[in-house]
Image (cartoon, rainbow, N blue to C red; front, top):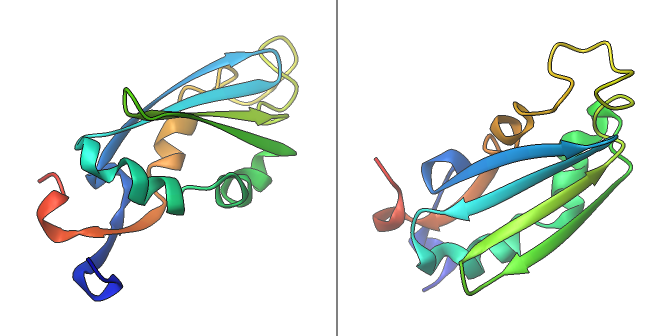
Length: 116
């Protein structure tokens, strides 16, 4: 497969996500709908790109954990919850909606692997 065989789409077309929290850290799991997409997403959904996406939320660091046997990823975002549940003034203190923000990322994938 070459880059010419790939099209740009939003991450939500090829994966789903789930978010949780602990203190001022957000935890986002990313699971491709098709296991064949794991390695393509590994190349594109990097710690630095996720950090860039969440800088406006105050995130200072992103750690990606790879779970190829599932296949899935787990991203831990430090300082992404404006102080955490007990001190944040935002409407989503737990950060549950942050998974939706992650799914807005653009990725390049084979057209036949896009969920419709």
